[in-house]
Image (cartoon, rainbow, N blue to C red; front, side, top):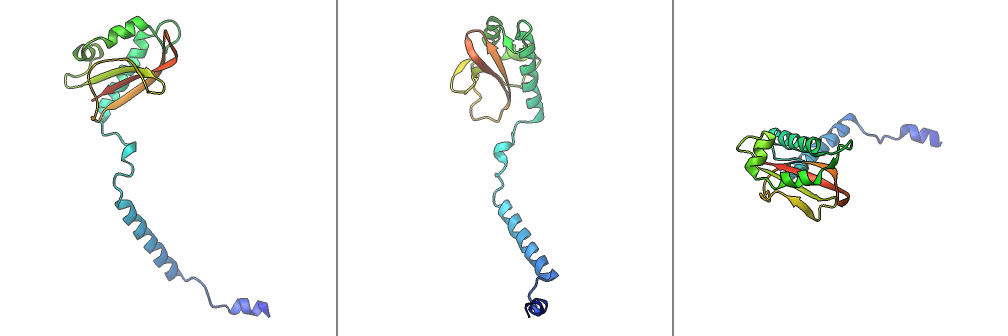
Length: 151
């Protein structure tokens, strides 16, 4: 008896029901996404590709030129502080950056709570391209973060 009842059950989903349901879902989903245009903006940098390349170039050159011994990421403290004491125009000349480029270089703790040393030009409230390397500097353990910002 139960077998015949299953065969005669006239409930079911038709192709039209499915198409209308999916269509309504897609329209609502796209509408909700359009309400949040800045949803992905924290993951996107407003700095251009040229600035990102310049920041990466300066960071790489600093690590290569200021390293001592066979360890590529152990920087010579005296040479590093000498570079950080230079003016912004001297840094642009040293690393071959255009005159319109601004640069900020800092050495900070790994947690980012304390700046150990850095250049004196301000980058706050600007869209900057950032490149960072984990380095060791004599007297600061276990390591530091070398951060180069270009705008």
